[in-house]
Image (cartoon, rainbow, N blue to C red; front, side):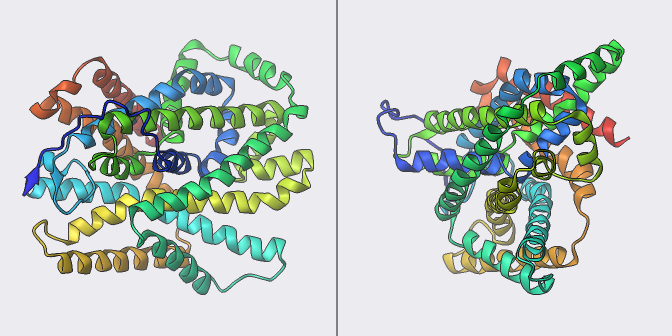
Length: 422
């Protein structure tokens, strides 16, 4: 049996601020600002100041608007008695519902594999390079890491988000510290020289670079996997409803946007273009560049911890909704509590087993992310919500200028992704 969600918001949502709200904001922050953020300055520094300007102008609206719209669609989805996460399921029927759940898992599960591989590699490197203990047994280390992460996921939505929030605070402080210690090294000539190089570029080439930068901006500020758990929490009775859920996303994105922009700007102003080009060629993140350029011994010692924390919270943030969705795939809606529990354990066993195997083998799944997961994420974030808005009567209130912007942004991002693959 299903019941329609009451999305009405209590009149005094500002006065009813709770610790849970702060935890959700930190959870959104933790999902977005992670290990990938450490590579962002290298990418921006390599491409030039035009990318930085585009991030300043388009970063917040291009990220915030589709996530808010995605949340509003989830909030209007029919609520099932067993409290499962909203993943567009009630807007489809029968095989369509299961197909959209499979699509969701295929979209985000490979991303968790990348985080798992990177986390184990970072720990192995830390033990051998910093502690001089030699290389750990990869099988044992992989098992301990994956088992520990899935043990946290097994605790449920609230515990996972709480863990991510606890990890987000030291990570935020770390990137703020790194940005601040570089201020004495700021050299605005890095930007002026880059602008001179851009002036020599034909106008058509400049517009092409702007177009191809859209995926970078979109995915640098993406926390789509956590929107479903957030919507699930806020549509529960007395938690504030749609208005408060949207407010948490907006507050989180203000913090996300300004922390990322300040971090990237500080790195770009203090590190030369040539250094960024070299770092990209060797697949190094910005912490390695700072340690080499400025001689900061502190960065050398804290860099592994920053990267490890970033990968842990990113793994948890993406995995939370994937595990729940895969559990639903293995368990019929009308199942008994015992059957649902059995399905959950089966989902954990399958996903953790695949993750352990891929992490232990240290497989190269980056190409899979770039060629398949990138377009699928863009489809899920931009196009599926807007398609539902214009084809489902229960979502007609969301039609208008905002939905049109999301459609245009999604098509532009997708076309840039496909062009880059050709």
